[in-house]
Length: 295
Image (cartoon, rainbow, N blue to C red; front, side):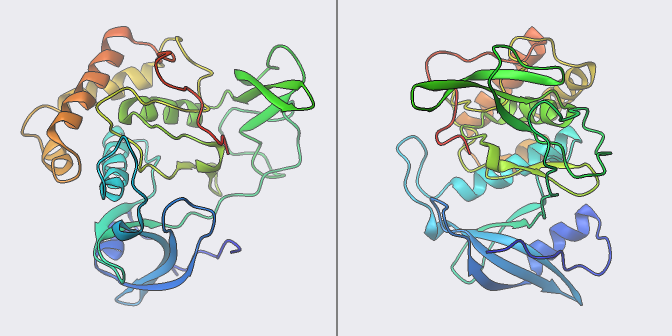
């Protein structure tokens, strides 16, 4: 379906949006096709405020061999909680609530900003959102052996007829924050289609159902910083997360409603690992490092 326009008549705060998503009346308008699980486009309304949202009922989740049945919605909410704890606000407001088809995840709909027509060599990659012609591309396939200025190499990809191209992503501060978040939440499916640049230069990541596995499952298109030192900002964030994940904290209490104790302990371990190394993780070699399909 075509992307709808944002409905709220005024700018709502994060807390107000969470309240609206939690307590507002859900009206299903249609289904978003092509997803492996049921994804319903809705509006949510309360006290004269209305906003578009996505509702993913637990009943519409397809079983996965490496995740307990019926847990994907809770993992999406847990990813939002961790995103908020970082202070980066990379995941749209997301709640767990009852709906027309039972309990499910409800997330604010984000209208992606249009891309300009630049090819992979023209993106500015600085994350300032000032490109007047539209959002610079975040991912590209290039014929060169090395990425151009402002780009980071991911891997060589087959493009048909025995040809390969270099998959690159922008050397963008927003993407780099998202790469750190994905390492923390153990995101097993960071695809290109899950990156939503919003008007004004903000970047969101969506679709976080396959996260928080106790085993290493990190699969992403954002490997360009693998092995590089974390930014000073990221070091500060993971240090703060380490304290927030101590037993008995409000964040851990909330996560305990969404994921298992073993998964919380593994989360602590990943944060501790980032604190100890001070570097972006590298592919483990024990699990495919690139999601498929990548878009």
